[in-house]
Image 1 (cartoon, helix red, strand yellow):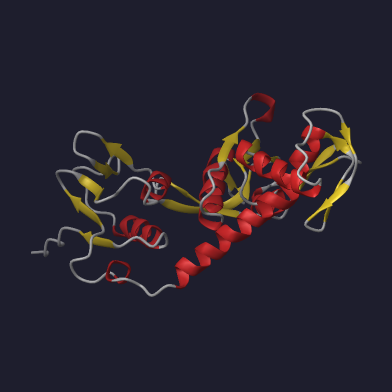
Image 2 (tube, rainbow, N blue to C red; image 1 turned 135 degrees about the vertical axis):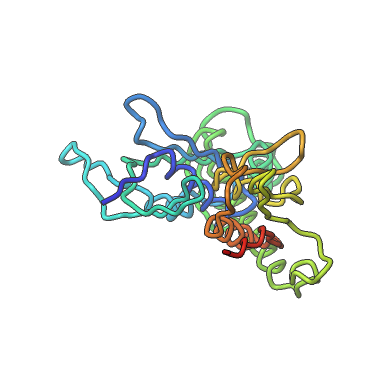
Length: 268
């Protein structure tokens, strides 16, 4: 059985989170010291913790059993990309902690809902407040800041996330443009290999999603030449399998990609 290092699992987890739950910035970190086999995931607003844990749970190689005070192995395996190569094995991850922060904007929206439920009264800045109902959700008796947090978490953020999901679905359902269909002359990325430059990718734009894919395959940004390059590929023969894998992952992000490799030299 192969084992996948925690840092590679963390990189794959971040890629899956961004792909499955787009529009949310996830901070995925590998632990250090005695927590080096743990991963932490932080984000603000967006999906609920349960949605995120649907993706984190299969990435754990072990889980803590509080009754036995010991870690128990899971049957999970993961497939990751390491230096452009796919590897499958058991994740060396003892646990994944998740934490969603609530933005000030969401808390302000929660305060508005609190006020509407109390005949326009401004919510107090302190003190214990009685329980009440907002949009069918029972807001528990609690201190003022905790009630605002519960309204934001139970009402404001689910409504906003549902609206964002509907908008994304509507965009995905719209007719494809010439650019999306990959018509000749459409702008896109060019993945090529030359002896002088090695394997490079040009045509990327800030925020188009290509950077995360290319970093996953080991590419680095060449500031002077303004392209992505695969380290160690100069003065080497083109790696067709590697380039195919890179192109496939870029296209999975709805990016248009053309590839170019030097023709094989005919044998004498």
